[in-house]
Length: 259
Length: 257
Image (tube, rainbow over all chains, first blue to last red; front, side, top):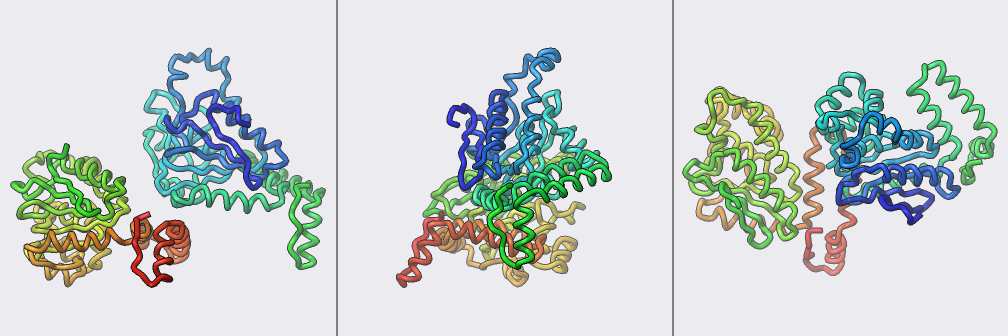
């Protein structure tokens, strides 16, 4: 996997690591980079070896926005034909847990990538925001929508309209991030959490992610039907048999296998 | 490069000397900016392990330069653009900070002294929350720091009555680390700062980082934060040196990281 130009990728302890690697431009996302990210994430999703995925950024920032150069001459027609956001859509179909380890800045497209993560850890010095409005545009890879789902109508509008940066404590209070981590320990603590998840029954994690995702979009009744079917489905797994047997026999379960 | 402050490094101690003595070191916009720049430079400079702020001439700092203030000034804008960034930079400085208070600390000058970790005070120094005396309220962190340092009752007295207090009185209220004679202020401050500069600097930074959150944090949260901080401290060279020196029965030599 060394043929990527803009990202570093590797696997350690069953964790697939994807590190944005354009530190000189604070990991600004360009289109080729997004294709690499999506390719890497889908490869990890298919890999038997990878249980959990971590996205992080090399250098001082997670990712400070998108490459403006690339789009300054675009027209509505060129963008329609390019259909670049189909790449982003594919991230929504990743079934394995995606963790984001965020430091410095996550702005614009960088924040949108963060919002594709299932769990977000960020350092105390992190600032996030959607500055697109200051360039006469708006977020385009789901940022507007996901921010609204998380923050609600009025707080989302405030951040999207002003383009101001939110500090990590506000982001934490708004439910945009899971934990504030000292910068010295960001990767280590994210890895620790990933390792903990990697020991959990993989099929449960997948179907929980599927159900929680749908609970955000569907009605309560419809998503409860999804929950029910996913629950039934898990009774076809070895891990359910072993998990419940071990509980009854008051012993720890053997390592879950994802089957 | 600096016009309103002086700046020097002596034995790992970075000195910032407010330098508008003819104006009692009153703040101007430029001075706020230069303070920020100097604090950030010292924070980055590995050769600096303690930071002193003091004033040239008679006063420590008399707060905002009222002569530069227009009658229709937007006070909120002024505080948000000038004083807030300065006080936030000071609070985020992980190296220990010491105010060496040579004379009057008034208004935002008092706030600046409160934002430092330690206050070494000349017998000639005085403190005054002068804001109320012109119909304003304390800013630049005074309403945050003062009740935390002296307690609510005394903080209300100082800010509402706006009376000047002298060095020894300030010491009685817990505002002051040490009162020294005016002639010895610089020497004693340098000695105290060098003592701090030889301590495990990273650990000091972590203590500051988490103690700043103490009043807004539950015990449970603080026990978690301490665990993070302890893990970070436990990864430093200074921790290894501290343990080794303990077993070797010698004085540790800390490097600051």
